[in-house]
Length: 500
Image (cartoon, rainbow, N blue to C red):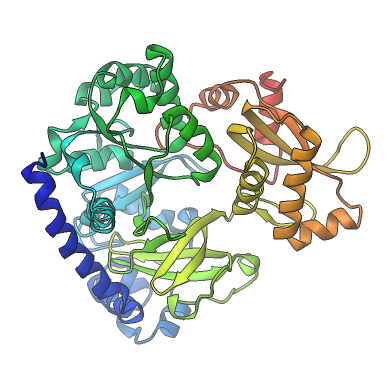
């Protein structure tokens, strides 16, 4: 019998769907309103005065007065906020700093304000409500839910709390979900990831888990430990587990492996959260891409990735984006980030409404020879190569081999197989075919004998976990880059003896 909570979630989901449709069907007007509000609210801040916000009347004015910046370029302002100054990037002080791994000089402190915090919480909630509205499935709200996340223990810096985003968000779980939520606070506070996952297995193995959420690579580790302990598939341990919520990486390379670990298919919802904002979530089960959050205190700009590193590349709003083009996403937010490059590249899969997929990182690509291969392309190539086969992959990354001992340079794929290919040559051919079809530059370099066919380096079982542990990034929100333009990861894998 359906509980009152499950029954009430359906009319609430319908109400939220109606509200989302209202702004999603007026995208340009919605973004224009956000643009005006952001400038008005921040006009008296130090940043607003330095960039003459009161004189900005049009988007063209904004582009001329506010250049694109990444964290290092915004750092002088952020450091003033970190030191306790008010009204620097946004009015007053932030209520949190989301602490993330640094780029070139130490940790990054991303401000979260009282205006921006609710948008993180609402987007996650709305993703689940849109699923309920579409499918009519709400029974799972009565079961136990697990969110594999960072520690909720927060430090303090000049009166402002700081921690990992997932740890901050843990403090905002709605009361009606608190009784259903696992792991316990005590377990969630364990810093060592492997110890934490072991404790989570102990806490959850006898519970009625209905929702499991986290970055796929770390959920996979949890699933494997469950199976090791019980000798059962995850779907047999948790008979009512029917919804997997994930973000951070593309799920497709993991899908076959997950279905094998679970023992059946389950519905999934993809999220696009980041410390800088909650940008998108999957609103339809049978549509590609995630609904861009146009009404969440974020103004979006886009620059074609191909031209991003040129002087003064063209900046456009959603009004002018096109399907299938690789864009660097630039954001201005009610947390005080202005024309900020978060480093992600996206492609639009729909313009009515606006849906995106994350295609990679602007710094994560291979272009050692001008091929400019991006994350989406290697993920798609792997997906096509393992379709209709028994091949299963746990993790992978790709690096250029510029100075081979003999012959032409090539791309080296480091793959940790669960089930290895029976015919490696055919597997390589399929990878090559897909990559060449997707990327004409790569095709030309192979045809012109500048590059030779890719090679595969097999990574030992749990090799990528060992690598992540060796660099102090096991668990949490950390993930393996799909590809890189240098050999840092590749050399470390060899150095640690993690290849076969």
